[in-house]
Length: 336
Image (cartoon, rainbow, N blue to C red; front, top):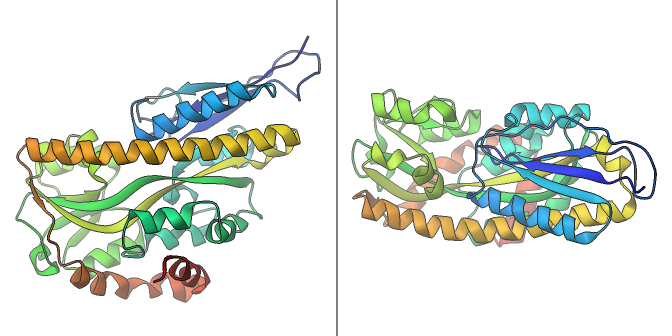
């Protein structure tokens, strides 16, 4: 009897994809199956990350290399932090999440948190696609228990608030802003005039509703998905930070696969990326229409140069510690 290695995928609120392999060995051997625990989070199957998972699952299942993939969604199995920890320990096979969850393993990955690193989403995608910059990034994973596979996305982050329309940094004065729990982001928004606070994403809607903070910053699709337009009157298209989602595989799992299975998993990661990007484009367009339909005032004419001048002033927080090599590579790749 052929031993099928079953691979299960799950997605979280941070874009987490967990893969569990069931079956101890490659195709063609006899024996029972061994189940490995899986971690997942809160994003639904209908999300852009969910679309990527579905495409990845289909690709693996159609490959015929002894891997059987199954998707899991909607907090069925856990969260992003435990996923990354599980990959290090070999109890989680594959996962994709926002880069912040990998920063304890590879602090250099925080380069993507630098504000105004990219002019637009096309420039960002050119860097996160297969190529020298991504290879350089994944090389930092070589000394960890995780192997880099692909980089997906959450999209460009935009600013929202319920105090006033914001088109320049002057308009942010005194605005209490929920930001990512990152020193770089905290300092950047302080430089741009806001009063930054780190609040867990799960508590954000309530914090906005109760006035704990006045505003926040997220991709448009996330603003709509989490119903934040109900408590935010204004959105400004600042496109200040691009949000990549890095997919990795546990080194223990990777080493247990045949070369053929590794090739299929790598291919599937890229198939999933393309589906994720396409779905994200659709989600962003749909989100913009929803905001307009709901009466949110969307400011498109933003003085992005003024924001960028202040935002880029915090780059030394990264470059003084980790050097300029990655920043230089990114700027060279994008013509910056």
